[in-house]
Amino acid sequence: MSTLESKDRVYRSPAGIAGGTLLLAIAAWLGLDAIFSGHGRAPWLALATLILVVPLIVAFTIRPAVYADQERLRIRNPFRVIVVPWGEAVSLRSGYSNELVVKSGAKYQLWALPVSLRGRKRAARREARAAADRAAEASGRPRRGGGLGGFGMGGGFGGGLSRGAVEQDGPVRPESDRAMDELRELLEARGGAESGAESGAESVRGEVTVRWAYEVAGPALAGAVLLAVLLATG
Image 1 (cartoon, rainbow, N blue to C red):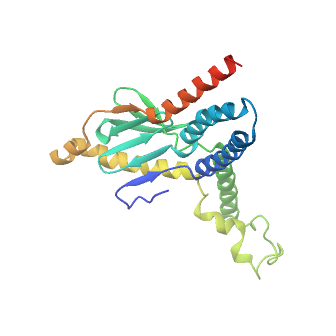
Image 2 (tube, rainbow, N blue to C red; image 1 turned 180 degrees about the vertical axis):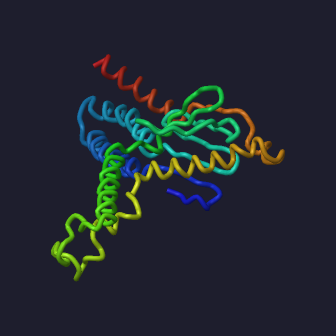
Image 3 (tube, rainbow, N blue to C red; image 1 turned 60 degrees about the vertical axis):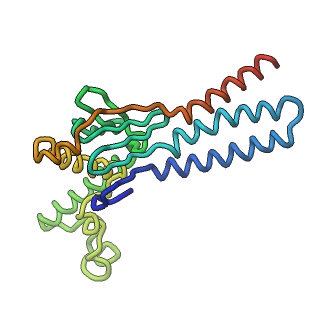
């Protein structure tokens, strides 16, 4: 994911892209094998299934992305592209999903930034361990696992690099949470321009636009119709 210093930022899910690529490879392997080696109606059924499945895999895994610049936020979800000028954005919320709330009250989910509940729990456990180690150190008690040297017996080898010392800088947050923090900073900076200089206000104003991704829905619908016809006439 991109850094806050760059002007234009792009946020995507590496896990989603990797999973989508794997699914596409499996679908291509099975589908092409059925097309070239199948008999009777099998090749046509395989072709229709590929036409249906491939766009859906791309839509939900590889396609999602969030583009942020100094003027607007562009959200590319599986079947829609939402463009929101910063002046129309109200807040970025994180719960069971990450979403953008605009002035009209509409909410748009950020598919490219999935929430990792497992990652949050792992970060919370690490933070709790680090806090316990800091409290023990402040009270003069030995840290957990510390005592005598690198073997848990105080002083000596590795004593200065205990788990508590390493984690005092804080837990490693999930990537999507860090990306949301960056977007909130940008929203605070650019959204505030609406009440600032006039030139800045003009750059963040505008209307929220929503465009349906017909390039994804069209092929998937065609594949579904073809598959339904083949199954109905079989």
